[in-house]
Length: 245
Figure 1 (cartoon, rainbow, N blue to C red):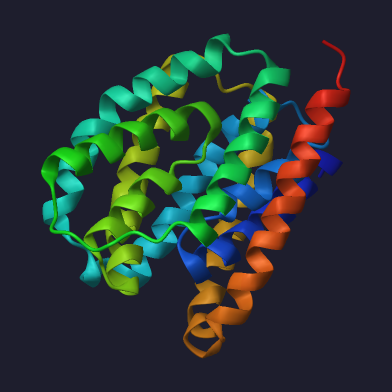
Figure 2: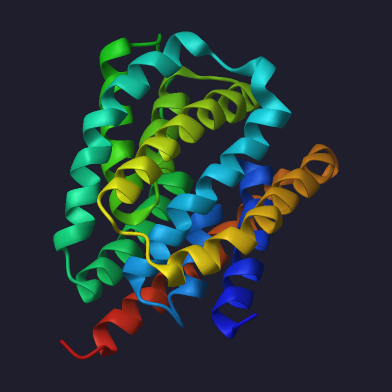
């Protein structure tokens, strides 16, 4: 296998492990690594394919905790959002995508660590809005987690409810994006040759995390993860700033 295939394989093996532990963040860790040897457009397309594999792992492990009443309005918003995200991907230059991805990572880290959200009742309108923004970000930069994770905190779901509900939402939303990207003709031989061998690695990373998550001190991991993501974000931003216009 080529170097690009191996880098994608290892990046999403680790990314699947991260998502299996905390529900989100796997793609945010893997994308900046793969972007060091591939264009951001190609990496985002690869990530959209592999995110479906990660989400499948979450669904297998946590499906019985899924809150289906919240998933439907999220899907309703995600469909037009995914369309919008695909066209953003078509027309945004690679350098701008790198900056957008890096800044999005930093925003997510800030929100994850510093924003405290009070609990409220479920709202179909807000769930639909969260689904729409998730669809836009998922199709454009492959990071669909923050909007719906924020909604999960807003309504106060328990951890396994978050994993189960978001896993079900992500897998359908991700399939929407993959179908739209396929129909638009975005998948090159390079994208498919890198993504397909990494699918089992992504699933393996997600599944391996399950027994460890039950024993690991999450407070310790919560301190490590922001540091890893911050380095990844700064790496992508620096790469974009140094790239030729």
